[in-house]
Length: 210
Image 1 (cartoon, rainbow, N blue to C red):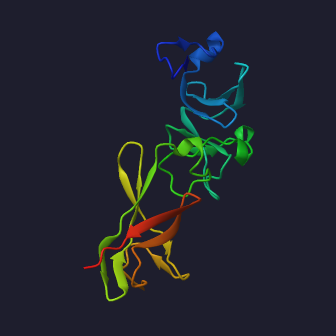
Image 2: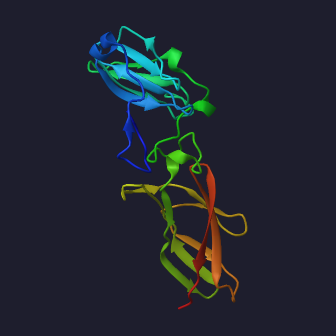
């Protein structure tokens, strides 16, 4: 079924397998970057592809009780563009016929750190990256703080990220560790840089002397 997100009451049948295909028990599915579906047919032990022209073909067979499919997003292992299936028996199998060029792969899920897709991709919409230094103090020309970077997922959950922070002057530090850096006497801000999901972030700290 295809649902119009602008009007969820509009639902249409996008593709229908043959009667024998329906008996195959379509289960989990995934979509690639070209809007084609990969479908696990549980009872048939097959993996199908539903193309944009609504045709249905088998990409693999001989996978008893195959229950779900997913595209990889890693640089190695479950590599970007490769299709994998899992069965009730615990088998994880790659489906070579389902492989696509990484550029045609689906956007990475929002909760995959370091995923192949850049954060500007559609798979990362709704993410927020929070830079929250703790214990910030400025005294006698030095600023002291502990940098922290947090990824806020679309469901509101938070993941603390370990990142390298670039400070003025070319100095690099790790998040979660205390930092002491010299700052000009009249400086009111301090700019830091770090990278999250392939995108360089710049954050400005307000320096309040006390």
